Length: 197
Image 1 (cartoon, rainbow, N blue to C red):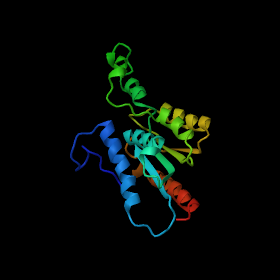
Image 2 (image 1 turned 135 degrees about the vertical axis):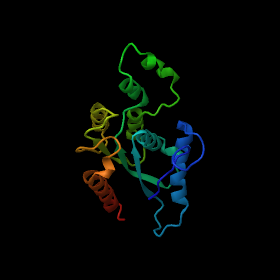
Image 3 (image 1 turned 30 degrees about the horizontal axis):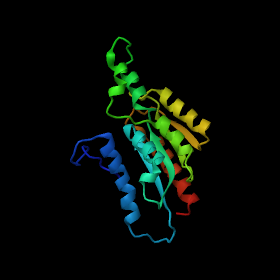
């Protein structure tokens, strides 16, 4: 398991930006594929997991798989409390039509867009990853409509998707709940068994 401490977060130095965080996210699979492996297969099965804004990074990295080492085979996307895209979140956070924020979309610095990324993933010539959406039942930041929309998007695009609503969880509590940990572990186990690891 590799956990990325993105620039500007936790103890990592630097200033967070979409391009910088994307570079950090690509560096993790590069590091993984550089490590000695016991098996002789050329492909390295990888699970990408993102929480909240990290779901936008995970889907965008999977959509732009050409940025990853050739050996990387993305088997599973775990999207915990995901949002459709930054534009929709802007309207979610500032729903009042009299506030100017919704009209400032062209000036956004970040453009993370899971909605668009899922379409790119579905058109990929490589094997398609399974998608697991973990939604917090009492999410105080991302509305339920985002999880609904992403699940429908996956279905419409022919992606194998499973959505789980973690009862009683707030936005940052999915994995601190037994149900969230169990669901995540089961998704990883199923993919692990399918690749024989």
